[in-house]
Length: 280
Image 1 (cartoon, rainbow, N blue to C red):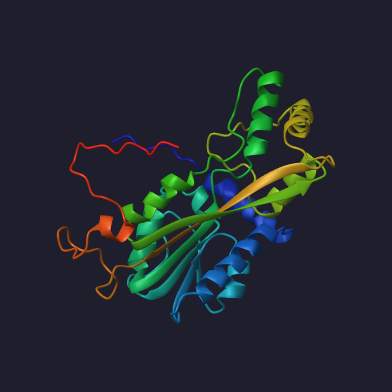
Image 2 (image 1 turned 120 degrees about the horizontal axis):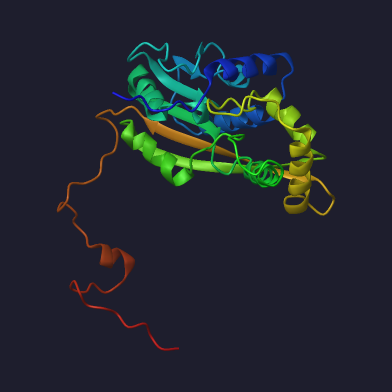
């Protein structure tokens, strides 16, 4: 059986994360951890056995001290049916098998345990992706993978259902960060362990002219009135619960006691009839 091609070079990703720990730029991870803390405060449940999955877990461990920390390896080091909260922290966008990561997280939860994932979504660095593509097409006459492809929110929400979670919710938060130049953006990406670790990336050193052209493209198309480069970061949050009999369930078809048309104050028509809009 043919294996699917790998998205991520795990050795490169581990090296990038190790470098980030030496010179961290964790402001976006801190934002994600603060948002997580606020979300958990709204849940009327006390969590006593928690686990955090990810490569750079420090900001999340500050929110959930005493949590078990595990790497986002293909096989998660989580025992089954043990935890009442599992947080997948800023790593799911690098997963070759995101559904597998979610399924393993669900199996680690007790019934009615909570799962929360936060990670970068598809709008992240769309400016950089475009500028690099335009520059490479101009300088080299072709394209190579330089920015990680990330999922769209509409598609990501379906992962929770595929993984067997109850009461699934997907939402996002978009942040725009201003940079004086492309080098400053690259510095922050290194400090978050988010530089290029794609398995099929171009391995040779890039031509300096490529990045000069990329900065020009970026400045032309994605800068503000003060000349700062604008970089978008989309934080996607996936929330779901391990199934349990105590959770609310949808009514069976045919058991409703009131018509939807009565609740909405509208007239119900037989199938095939049409309403003509009132004339103004």
